[in-house]
Image: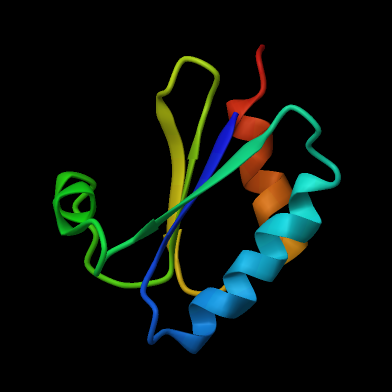
Length: 88
């Protein structure tokens, strides 16, 4: 499972989202967290069709997107969404 944070350096909400994902990852030992900064990698942001930061994308082990949300999530919201990425 991959938790991707699409952020920007001028985004205070992105800092809070980074902390939420780190907390959630404690309960998801198989998860990896990646971060894409829209200013540093605009092509990746465009490819992902990012309109706002922060955006959180959760992918399953096959790389399929199972969840996407903008704004600052809570740890329970991330964990609930992550269940969709677990093998059946």
